[in-house]
Image 1 (tube, helix red, strand yellow):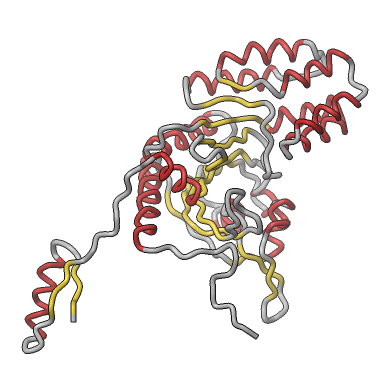
Image 2: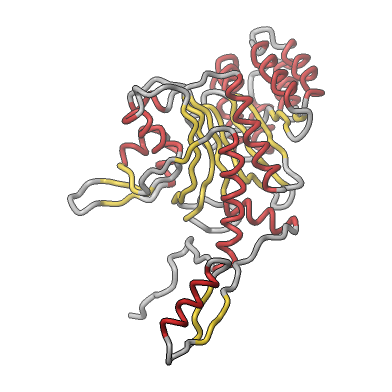
Amino acid sequence: MKKNLRNPKGSRDWLPDEVAKQEYVRKSLVSAFEKWGYKPIQTPILINWDTLTISSSKLSDTAFKLIGQQGEVIALRADLTTPIARVTAERLKDDELPFRFYYVGKVFRYQSRKTTNEKELYQIGIELIGSKEGFSDLECLKVLHDSLEKLGLNQYLIVINHASFWQELFKCFGETAQKLYKALNQKDLVLFHDLLEQSKFSKDEKTFWHELIYIRGSKEVINKFKNISNNIKKLKVKKLISYFEDIFKLFDKDVEIDLSLTSDIDYYTGVYFEVITPYIGKSIGSGGRYDELINKFGFDVPAIGFSFCLEDLLLALEKQGKSFPKFKAPKLLSINKTNIKKTFEEIKKIQRKSSAAIKL
């Protein structure tokens, strides 16, 4: 049988110039995070299977499941928010809140990246733990915005929605609303409209849903949202409208609401958002509020955060035509075989100014 010595499907090597690009992105983002007082945190790549399943059924469906030597069930981490939630509950209950963490690390998921078949990806992001909805949401969005500006990405859009809006729709419209949500999550507008036409909704309710999925924009769409909501008396969205208005007091560009936006993460309880760019036509980062996740590990504390996919960020910047620093080639020296000590002294002098290598 012929041996397969190539990388497993979904993994890749990074050559020196590619690593230099990675480092540029990493250092740029870390610089932006640290200016806001965020500190680094690291968690293991291997996690207990129960840690993963308690947080999100959707994540566990995509995770790499492993059996240890003693028969224990473990997994490769599928995100970094879950293990940070675990360590917060496990080790930081008595520390002063809030916590501001940033992280850089690999995650592993089946079918994790829609643009390629990569299953091993770098995530880089932040978690703000211990602050309730309000100013902390604005801080998180501002750190996200500042990070993109620091990277020099010219065209991007932060698109937001709120979990409470869908919870209110489920409450008012029942099972049909849940089916409509799933159709939007699958990006299947044909199914969405078919379900809507087959529903027992009134004429006003069908008009509301038809108009709802096209409400996207900045502060100018708030009035439209108010108008269509007023036609559904049982719908309570005044608090949500006020929340969106506060966001647009801070951001007059680069941020929009999209009431049709859904999320693949099932632990969001408040605002959730994604960053899209025309350079690759898909999300390069996402995040949201998860006030109930850490409590699953025994510590009832609110939180919000976001993460970027480093590979997608690089791809977007490359398509933009961004110029990256390259790996600096070391200076080459010939060995003085009659005086080895003198050769290494010369190397040391050069290393004080730059890197050096020996040429045999």
